[in-house]
Length: 156
Image 1 (tube, rainbow, N blue to C red):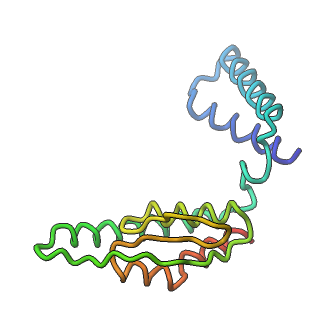
Image 2 (tube, one colour):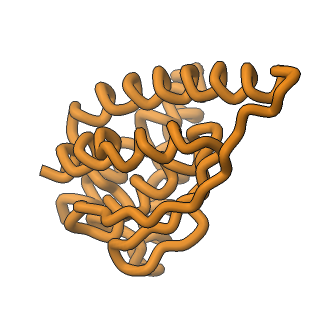
C-alpha cells in the first residue's frame, strides 16, 4: 500500500510538472490518467520496493553528485589517452565482489561501473562482477572499493 501511495504521488507531481495547465478539465484528465496508470501497474504486479526504491532517500543525491564527478574525471582521462600520440592503455579484466545486500544494489553498482568511461561490467553472477577496464589505474580505482562503499551506504 505504501508503494501505491508513493507511485500515485510521483506520477501526479510529474504530470503536473509537465502539464503546466491547471484548468478543471485538464486536472481531471490528469487524475484519470494517473489513476489508470496506478491501476494497470497494480494489475501487472510491478508496484514493489524494487520498482520504487524509496528507501534510498536523500543519500542518492549525494551519490549522483559524486558519480557525475567521477564520470567527468574518467571522461577527461579517457580523452587524454585517446588523443595521446602513444596509446597509453593497459586493458585488463578484474573480478569484484559486490557488498550490496539486494539485487537492486548490485544492479546499481554494475550500471555505475558501466556508465563510467573506461570501465564496463561484462558479467554479473550473484555478487561477483567481472569488469573490463581500459587501464590498470581504472581497475585499481574499482578494486579500492570507493564506489562499492558508496552504493552500499545507499541501501541502509
